[in-house]
Image 1 (cartoon, helix red, strand yellow):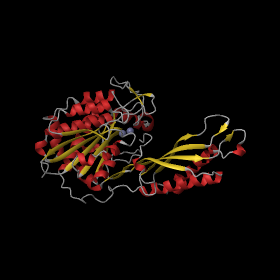
Image 2 (cartoon, protein in one colour):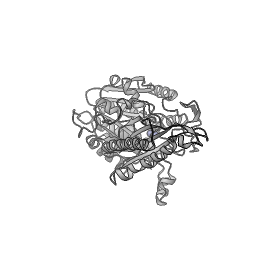
Image 3 (cartoon, helix red, strand yellow):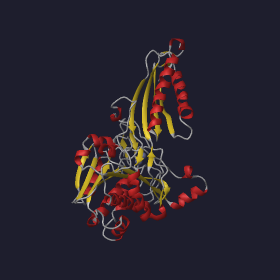
Image 4 (cartoon, helix red, strand yellow):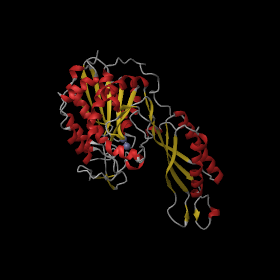
Length: 457
Ligand SMILES: [Zn+2]
Ligand SMILES: [Zn+2]
């Protein structure tokens, strides 16, 4: 037996006794005060590395794929469990009004000084992972096996996990039997949501260039006007979800950006649009990508374009699809530990780059979420039917985790890791092959490695 006693009991004993978590709220506030943009998390990574010095038995590696960090505790025979936390902030001006609100700003990739904010709770994820390490470290006589903590940068650009993997993550840490991750989100504070199956969408970002023929604005007959073509494309793309996807099947095709022309008297010779597509089903994602190509090419032909449109696939992410087998190992322990605050999770339309890590190792995974909205605020908004209006979502300037949710995320992480350490994993133990590498067929090879252009939550 790799774990002696129930994970819930072990964690409860640790937090009421041996494990000192008195530093955690202050650390969280420090991280919150100083958010850094994706790929530029120098100070945050340094702070995490400094915190890790308090765990002398964990083997720490820094600088993986930029600012990525791992910490490994080898504690005898048993399963290997990987837990991942992300730590980047967003270019958002904080409006929470708390004393520890961010006043930080930073140069973005375009060279503009922008305000930064932990508007997605990655500060809470980081403080949670360090807290879970403290618990697991304190109770190590109760379990055996190996725990791998991964601190990942640049999640918001969907390039951080990929960066760590291509920089050799799989060689730096032992191969896990299972990978775990959690995310904070609006919901009654301290409610733990966990279900099997698709939980976050795949995200496909496509940049399309349409080539017309430029002319004087007074001589449209001399042009192939890419602005009119773009308008037709944007409208026609709306029929993919409404006319080609079966009713009830989830899908999003958003044209999020249009660029064409710089002057009032010039018909430009080209136009660019950027699309964000979200799907749970890989089958329908591939169908939509085909439909996008078909519509764009046909509209360009209808407009009389002499040059074929160009498609650039950036920021491809697979859906987060929870493994049934891992769910069955962990969920009973969430129920045991959190009682009626352990609930089923509704799929999220956001996307995550976490699955890149388990996919690289070829192992199953589980992703769950925890509500962070003060319960009174949630109840008031719910009673008024105003949840979508009054409760700030992730990436909103008012998004702020209730401090009371921190012990819950911490204990959820520790309980889940212990639950997985207590299970005998065998190759093929996972319920099916859903965790195998996503099939990106139908898209140009190698595009998944291209740097992503925009935040994707
Ligand atoms: Zn986010
Ligand atoms: Zn996030």
